[in-house]
Length: 131
Image (cartoon, rainbow, N blue to C red; front, top):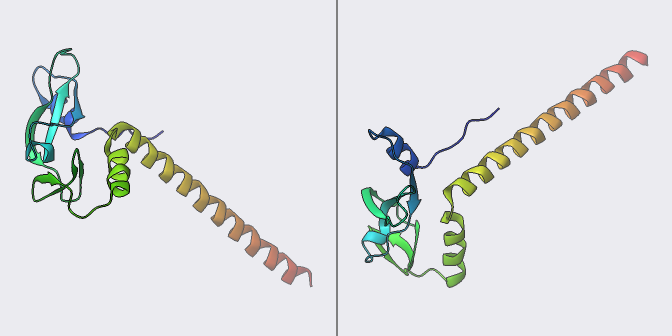
């Protein structure tokens, strides 16, 4: 019914020849690598997280807080905010599923509202016609 969102790493892995099963991960070498796009090949048991092209956007969660101009650090965010941001960014697939479920729920609510308004309009016209 709906498509499946894939991460940047998955898309990158599928584009390679031969294709690889790449998944997002967090590079932890230094404060600069923590704010880079990193992927891991799931078929390699001992494979480590590799830095790919691209830098995470400012405000993205990283191991020490969040990224600002390509450097990971604590830039005035409280520990609660950091934990919240880390929770959101831990699993892209789960986050994408949540977004899909939320949009499905929103669409269902909109259709229910449309049906209710349509029924209300019909009821009003019925009352006018009867009287």
